[in-house]
Image (cartoon, rainbow, N blue to C red; front, side, top):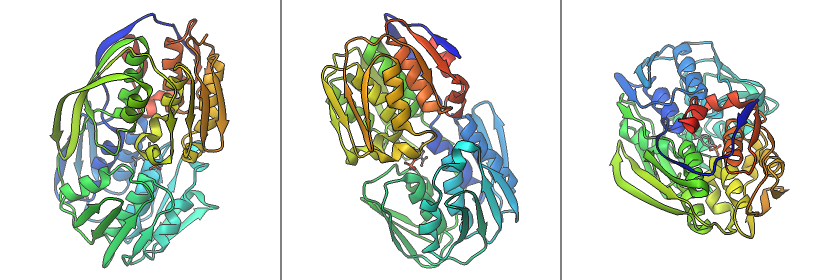
Length: 415
Ligand code: S3P
C-alpha cells in the first residue's frame, strides 16, 4: 500500500517517460529491418521490456542502456519461439500480426490480466489474409503457424490501433494489397513508422493501404508519452500549474485536450514542432474551474487510456458529466469502467458506471480513501491524482503496477 498525502498546491516542470506505443513499435519493427537502429528516450517500462525480450527470443539483438535501446534486426525470425508478452496487449497483438506471414511457428503467452483479454479480435481478421492463428477460446496462449498471406480488404468493427497494426504488419508480408478500415481513426504510429522505414503504405482518413515491403532500420527519438503526461497535466488543472516538456501531440492521441476544452481547463501548447514524423509540444496547464461535459464514441480512441483520469476530473467539476461509447474500457488491463467508478466512489465522489461509460456528478471536494488499483497502472496513477487533490489523501493498493508504463511515477510526483 502506498500512502498519498493531499496537497494544497502542485506546481512544476516535468520531463515524462518516452511514449509506450512508439517505443514498442520502434523496437519491434527495427528488429526485423535491415540495419541497426538506436532508439533514444525510449520508455524502459515493463511492457516495452516484454517487447524487447520477445524480439531477442526471435533472434534480434536488443540492448538496453539507460533510456537508449540499440536494435540489430534479424533477416529471419527463429522458429518455435515461446514469447512471454507479460501484461502487454500491444506486444501480443502486434506480434501476432507481424509473425503471421514470417514463415515460423511461435507461441505467445502472458500474465493473468493479458490471458483474460480478447485475442479473437486479431486472430479473426488475420484469418481473412489466410493466416493460421489458434487462440485458446479467443484468448492467450496464441499459436502462430507458417502460412503464405494474401492481401485483402478488412473492415474492422472496433477502432483499435492494436488490431489495425496487427493487420498492417501482416500486410507487409502478404502478396497484393491489404486495405484496413476502422469505424473511427485510432492512433497511427504504426503507419507513420512503417512509412519512415520505407514501407509501401498510405493513409487516407480511416483507410490504410499497405503492400509487401522490406523495412529499413531507422533511429527513433521517442517523444514523451501524453498518456503519462496526462496525470501531471490533470494535477496542474486541479491544484496549480504544470509544464510537461517534449510531449507527443500526434492528433490521434490528443483527445484529452478536447476533453480539457470542454471541461474549461486552461492549457497552452508551447514550442510546437515535428520530430521523426510526430508532432511534439510542451504543454502548460493551469488551475481551472471545471464544469461537466459530454463525451461520446467518436472521441474515445484518441483518449482511450486517459478516460479514467478524465472521469476523475469530471468528479471535481461543477455539474453532471456523461461519458459513453467507451465499452473498450472493459477489456483493458482491468475492467476500467468498474475500477474507475469504484475509485471515484472510494474518494467520496459520485459515479454511476454504465455498460459503455459513466455518469459522474461532480463535487467541489472529495474526502479521499483507499483505492484498489486492480494491478492496473492507469487506475493506480489516476488514484494517486485523485488522492493528491482530495481533502485527506489515502492509500493505493498494489502501486507497483505503475512500472508497466511509468516506473518512476511516485518519485516524479514527490520531486
Ligand atoms: C495501443 C493502443 C490502445 C491503447 C494501448 C496502446 C497501441 O489499445 O489502449 O495502451 O500502442 O497501439 P487499443 O488500440 O486496443 O484500443
